[in-house]
Image (cartoon, rainbow, N blue to C red; front, side):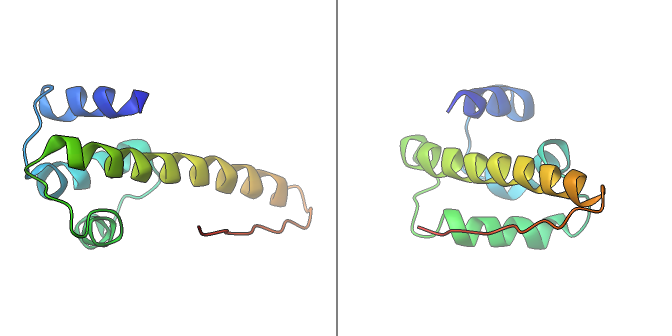
Length: 100
């Protein structure tokens, strides 16, 4: 939840608007992840996965879903990076994905 306000302030001058995902998410992804291509299709998939049936005009409804997205992204990014570093040392690495 800490990163929510930080990202909102950085990419939208601290103001929420209902076009945030469409307009800002493609600009945010290269900064907080390793994604640097196909950003608009990826943004549509993020919207489909995390924001289906969410009233984007209501920040109180948007915020928890955006925090879930950030948490998933940042958690898996660290694990993926660590696994890649270990694998680069000729060590067998198994990565698992658990869904709830």
